[in-house]
Length: 276
Ligand code: AMP
Ligand code: MG
Image 1 (tube, rainbow, N blue to C red):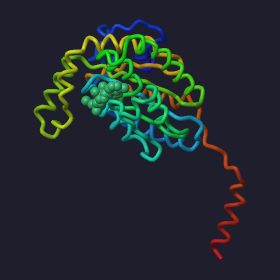
Image 2 (tube, helix red, strand yellow):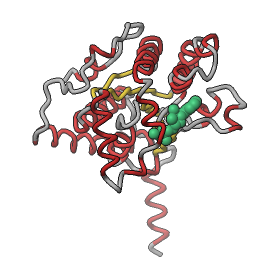
Image 3 (cartoon, helix red, strand yellow):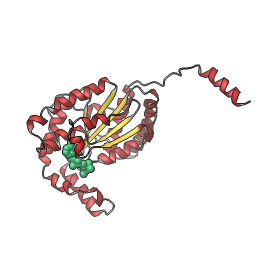
Image 4 (cartoon, protein in one colour):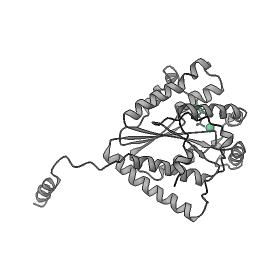
């Protein structure tokens, strides 16, 4: 299956999001076969996380970015349902607190980087500092325009220290966003998910698309690639994201560590003692 290659943003590629169909499913159908693939991928993810935790050589950082209602929460719920919570952390990045804003933009990010053996999922990330910050002119262009390179260098340091980085942009259409906002308005159990910003931010859609295009173009690197996931269809989004995570983890060539002592001898001695 060529899903990974098809969804990867090649480094430096000029991205025009209008050319990416958010309804695309790359030939997959929402049928029993895809359902089976999804279930199988969750079992595989569980096994790979166990190995990551045991081998403690690498950490895995999964970055999720999307427009409002883009499906970040749903993706996290899906991926998390396949792993042991003990080795997993989710961090949601909101408007910076006074303490965070008093530091460089990567300060709060660095603190949330996973330990070796752990998986960390970022719900939003340092990319907000070249997205919302750029669209709303929260800092001058001279400041945000330097951040692409700063981000690349930061991610490179992490990668060189055994942090495997995967970045997913969940691509939905403006129409799909409207549909999801309407669903949230209608369903009293989903009202809480809406905020006044969701309505305001829609007006900035084109500005966001341009900001995303630059982030995807300038910050998809061999050490921290971006993937554009067509996300109008939840089932395909989940299938694609879990597939890419699994393939990346398989590439890590992880092995269970060998015991640091003579396990047979120690085991026999302990067993004999405990049966006195
Ligand atoms: P939500 O993810 O819906 O809870 O919303 C979090 C809000 O925090 C979004 O409106 C983001 O744009 C905003 N946010 C996240 N990071 C930053 C940042 N670095 N600067 C300004 N706003 C941010
Ligand atoms: Mg929101």
